[in-house]
Length: 450
Image (cartoon, rainbow, N blue to C red; front, side, top):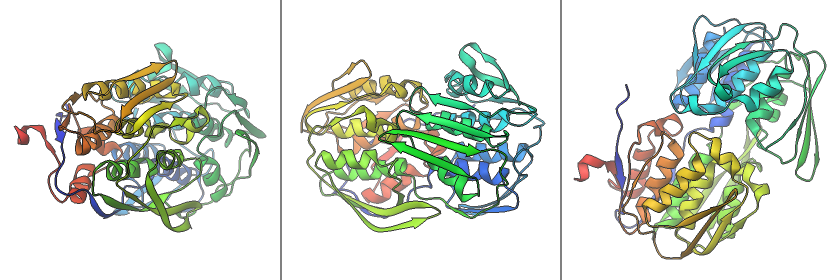
């Protein structure tokens, strides 16, 4: 059983300074491994996130018959089996804490005539899967799980999968991607309609590997069509730095007086940059330099400097482009002057934890009151530093843990978390990177500060 790692953060020295690289984008990393497994030939990947979540996907692709090899730090090679060529795994597929991997792999399995069982850690086993298994069942796959469709989940893929025509009821890139992955193995055209645009890494990567994908956009509404049974070809993938991971050192720099931090090579896909737009609306000094395109995705170097922030009203339509960043944005709002309202956060209730409730609890433990009104989060502050001084229950949620530790770097008193060990699922060496920017031990095991 994994030992917990209580951790504390507090102000240290004259701000945060330096240029850093953060881990590769988790969404792109998962998909690079999966599409590599479905392609004919070899896929070379550079910049792959080597956190536990992505390593679970790599292990699952091996179990499904692909040859997956690590060549060096961030450098991986996948020899795929072609669309429809995955084989039945000999054992249960353990997805750890990764909801993205579990849901997308449900789509992969649904189109293959094989049997598999998926499970995960205690947190993942609580998360709903019916949002993907219900639409995927229409292609002919069969899913049997615990109450609510939760893991462990058995999957019997369709022998002759049908193309799907599905309108996604709530904004979810995972649901859209699972349906498209199942559609790869179906004869005919799979169609997915989104009322609100979500991150489009799946569409971009399908094209990169040679699939025929058409997208029609009308405002926020998008219709994606995929021609089934393409021959995907192995293709090189350069994984950009994850904007969700870049958020933590950038927000810390905005909050800690005297700070100036640059994060290099951050993915700037417009469907992922809602946080950066919002921070600028709050008055953040946040600039982009060295814009470029790598692996089909726009990237750039982001620089953040200490800023006096003001409250902001974030529309619900922006939520899909920053759904993972709301906890750290709430921390930023705890230092802003005025009222911040984040609208349409229902999706946060079904993340690694009930992330909306966990964010409210994080703030409350550190002297910041907030209100949940329907699916909106409201935080009213006077611009002074958050009081801090609390111990945050993380519920095995890496983003709650990192957000709380960022708060501690700027609050009046240090902030502790009950566990930080699982941060490595998405951001290996987060604590080391932040301490490097601080020029000292700003974040440390709790017992070392006693």
